[in-house]
Length: 443
Image (cartoon, rainbow, N blue to C red; front, top):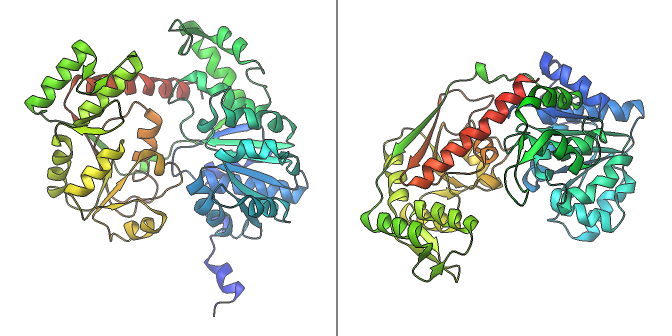
């Protein structure tokens, strides 16, 4: 049997923290900051150390960590307890996977850190539970970018009352600089851009559509905007230049004549067999589905025209040395891939360890199930995307599961190009990546 001192010697000493992490810890301890760090930079230990500092000083007595379910159940408890200088901090879990009674017991416990999930924020507000906390960490602030969203609005009033708060993310502007507003407001109480989103948008942006759903930063204000934003931001320097290369490849594949004909017909008529498309947004969704080889009809049934994209992925797997992550976007893709490649396994909490032990040759996953905090870099170095993404955040976060600290090989990422919608999606991601470039220039 191991003694407590035996366990202590296995924990990581704070001497392993890098100078960049130590600087970030100073900013996080001071609080009212959005801490931005690329995947693998150690955001969790930075925040955990800041918690330890503020608990020790008496500035806070109970901290609420809001994060995603997978990270709540594994990453945060494991990270806090794996470092010598934070392992003494007791944590309690109040996630959506638990019954309400167990959540309330966690909140009422003497644990100074309670970990919960974004989907429970309305429940916290309706039961007046935020009053138990004087410290707040929002782990992945991009989940709360909508000012009118129920999760952000549930937290907004409580965030103002916190004695100390920080936000964490690696991709703050991947979906547009206007998305910074709520991320900053929840941690800086309006210091950078005020407390009225309408005023924020009208001051810095212009609408690109009649309904004012999409906004672009006024070009002549770009430098001033990022300078002002960085009042409430600390950016951890990007360490990834020291990693092996990230090599992205786009492979041209040919759709079958039947699929090309269906795609051309849809572009002209916005209709397919047992399916009509009444809006421009739905048109775009249907084009993306067709690029995968299927579409949902009006009864939400998947109608396959061609499995060409899945077959191209399987052919690529046979030519690849080493284990492969395969990324799907639609449930029919997942189901059809597992039918055609039955030895593939789905990402689960249990399979992460087996993958990193290199026991799974092909693992299938969705971008939403493998966001930040999921470490897969020890299990392989190849990613194949079955279908393309509109979201730069999804793309970058998923690729960072392999391309991160601890990866020993070049990471190869493959995308497919078959129909015109693939080009549109690629162009949109390139446009979004410019936001990140502009943001870093302002750092």
